[in-house]
Image (tube, rainbow, N blue to C red; front, side, top):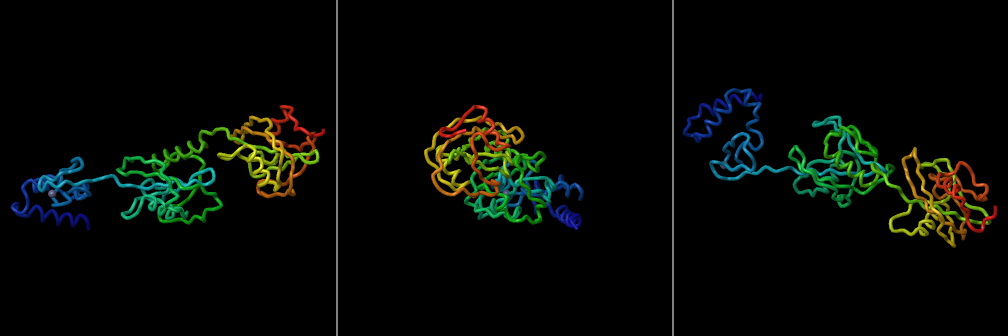
Length: 346
Ligand SMILES: [Zn+2]
């Protein structure tokens, strides 16, 4: 069909009286289109081949913007904006596996062209929904980085607010996507190198590819000569006994963190808080490194209960000389220092 059209077109042009067409146009057309096949291969009627005002052909390979020799109108051709979204889920990012060219079968971040009338955030949220089934609010997408890509697109990378895997809807295969995966690193051999760079920059920032020590707070709660411990589950040090505690949050005092964690985990109130020793705890297998700050306190009120059963198998009170085994690494390290809280009998 196409060769036939081209042949008819060519016969028309080449048999047209020269007076109807400017001389330089027809010589150019003749030079370029000596036979049907090269004509098709040249894609001579492709995007930007002609003046967008008067339709005169440009010379092939001319740089942009192009000024028409005939009408002096200047035609522009510009990079196309593409919105790409990093969607953090737990410790990872959402990637999709492409089922279309280019780079079919490879992983990429969700994203696509910005349509006229859309903000880049709206385009990003729409593409994420289409490709992953995850609904974002466009306003939650923050600017992350902007890169010019070799295919003449302008990649605008945004980052959505973090989510938990439990919050994600089930994935359904789409016309463009065969798979949705959450990976805790920027995988090799992605469809687009700049997507990989953006993902790596994200993990660099969140400290997962270049991890730094974190700060944990552990509360040694004393009641009737005993201290409170719980057995960990679903976390590093699973199956070991530990004091109530957790991460020091941004802007929080150490004492406030101890009060909060004891309440959130065990449902009790504490008083007479005192800053205790710290330990330097390297969990080799889990590739985690904590500085654990110990706080001693007295039990004040409330009855102990498992408020976070997914994180704790149960709480119990123990004498200092009879702390249960196995012990969470920070407790092992604390014991090596010979520390013992005030007011405890052996
Ligand atoms: Zn023109």
